[in-house]
Length: 114
Image 1 (tube, rainbow, N blue to C red):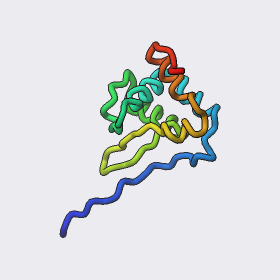
Image 2: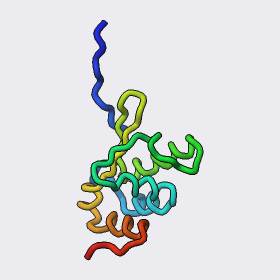
Image 3: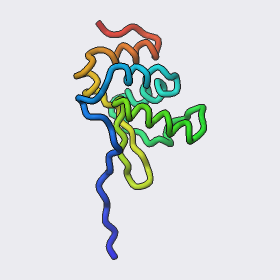
Image 4: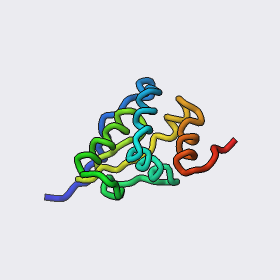
């Protein structure tokens, strides 16, 4: 039987009109989740959950990714047995201009661009 490649399966996430500022801020307030977001903020970053070296157990790591996804901060797509993660930068910029850049700048210890 020939092997067929299946299309990536997106995990449930809020639509643009369902993303709430309080959920985004809550998700970004945790140091582990902020670390995930800063790594995903690198240009062209799409990373597997296992690519992150986090100081937590696998189940806690799964929880952090779920919080970020359910808040609308990241998008997760299942490819085979992997979950690939990307930052929903454009969606967040549309809803809350400058928020993500300011949070990332603060996390990286620099001033936001004026």
